[in-house]
Length: 242
Image (cartoon, rainbow, N blue to C red):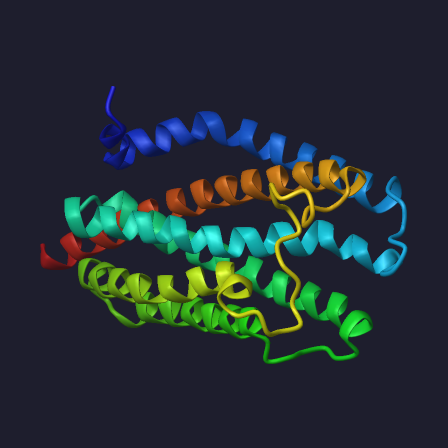
């Protein structure tokens, strides 16, 4: 069995119809477990107090905002190289989901930063690159909506996705590139000196798993919708020509 078989829209819909309920249920289970565990059964931080628990939403949302763009990049490259329509539609489907995660990360970052830094916003390298990434999400979605021909839209948005990937990388590694800035380093790291305590680490992993599964479920669902919408547009165009 080849992965390219799922480039067939019919097979993609049939397969995702089977797995979508299971992924959705697993996402809900992980999110409820992780958030309840993190917010109600972990202690306050000795310096940050209860505000540290924003971590359970902020960190997974920020990770998925960047990884959603990475997924769009891979799907866009598949479209450019192999011209599989499902990959282009999957990238289009992922954009609003990734943009929403970016908004959540920016909002929770402001809520977390205000009591810690004394300001809602700072032109920190990571924060700034993250804001630019959000603007790329908006531009990507606007470009899809502005072009009637789906193939042309897929070509142009794929190029935009390649350019925006620079800012996705900057968002992830800005703290390593620039030592200046208010934003801390990675909270989840293999480095024991940087990594958070285990009491926060384990519920955070469950939350991250929930966000990943939620992203997959939403992208599958939205890709199905995009496939059906494209099919409907093709049928309408055929009827007009007839």
